[in-house]
Length: 104
Image (tube, rainbow, N blue to C red; front, side, top):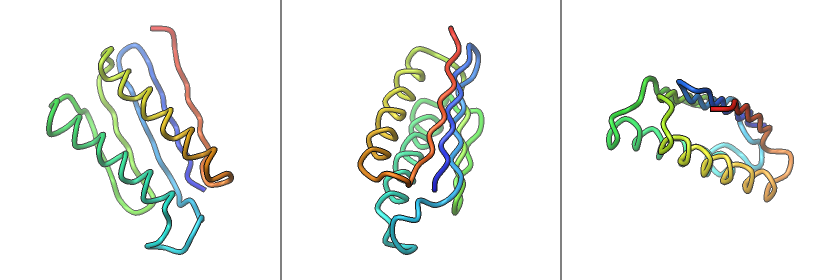
């Protein structure tokens, strides 16, 4: 199971992914591929396009992104959360999603 944690605070937004979906064997798992692809997309956007990233780590079974809070970054992360929820509904038992939102 992939544990997805999103923390949204007034000064920083953090996304942490840990684990494997276990939907299929390694190299053929569509859930892991989908989640990996979207976290890499966000990393590329925040670090290479928008140049706003604080921290980005991506390796086998782990991903982490930290960016400063802004309305634009928040909207992108909200889209990420919707995507992860959709994947979780399509492939039950593969994702554990924890979203913590604070009033901004």
